[in-house]
Length: 412
Image (cartoon, rainbow, N blue to C red):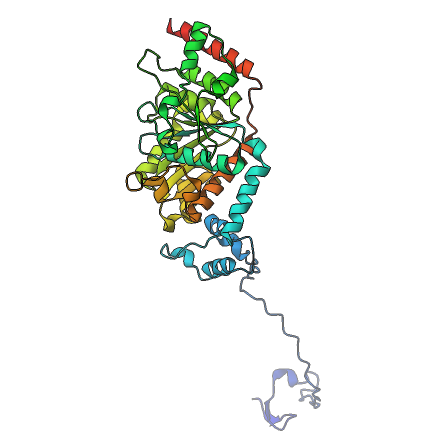
């Protein structure tokens, strides 16, 4: 049996077989072991099982998160009331509510109007083009838009533009300028002069028409007469308009309603700039404009400059960049080429007000400002396209004769 004895620490220790001396069969003496200070083992580093989160990317600039139509309304002049309103409009997120008025980018409307007029005069060399207005149906304010644009440019630039009325059904070219329709030269008669071989000059043609005293707009008409003068075809229309363009560098064409008239096709093909217009903002109006732009007979896609979409009779609360960009998205056009003209009684109401129709000082300032923007955009797109021109009236007459002969061959 094993015996017990006190251990080194004064406790009881059990004698183990290893304590016995084999040779002497006695218990080995046990020497006390001095304990030193215990050495602490370094703890192994903790291995983190959590995933390391990537650093957050920096926030983009606030203005880069805004929609395009909001940035288009940003005034260029800082430290102004218009800029302060735009800043609060964006920071408070008011663009979510259509009931809140959209900020205007115009700080001083009269200063902008003067700048637009100065821009027209500084770039008057680009007012050398054929501009034609087109619409799918009647009552689309074609004549209103083209006449006020011609009168505005003629009034402030003094370049004597020409206006060619081509609406066979109801031509308002004369009535709105208080001119005598019987004194207007019928451009269709040029075909008969060519057919009969009667020579004529540009100077003679310039004396055969009426001119508006206020704006200097020269008026012509192009429609068949009941005395046997027939309507002209597409090729003839192109030749005649190019010849008229030689006499008057800035020529406006007011076409008739309908998408398939040969005269309208020729006018659209000869134009350097096309204005697709309508009156009011509605699904039907936008659908008509879309049909006008898509018609292959007009060859709008082949032109150097993009067409302008002009909508008149717009209520003042809708005259903003939000409406402009929404229409551009609906029609797939450049927002800068969407022109909104406000409702003005001197432009739209023909029965109630017995006034001179095209009278520039009669317009309200808001309407004059928007028309000046319209004219400025016309010059900008013409300058970007640099349209090609015929360089002499003699060449224009030769092309007119060739077009007439070719048309006669096709008819045979």
